[in-house]
Image (cartoon, rainbow, N blue to C red; front, side, top):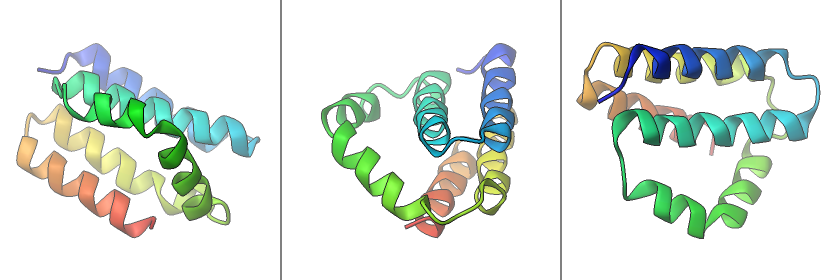
Length: 104
């Protein structure tokens, strides 16, 4: 379901997270990453939940990564993108779960 542009966009967001000097900017980029993953994979359910619970999700995200450098979670984000790019939905799902669990 993804396009090459989706993959380029996702890697670009990862690069922007790494370069971001401001914590709030990094949080916004992390949310953009997840929303772009939803779009790239054709997921129609999670975006609805994500939008409904955006404030709670953002609060949990802030609490879980406030003391982490981007290098601690970016490799996992890039593994998610690589799995999507390879067209391996099961692996992408597994990588996303690993990303979320490692940052709780």
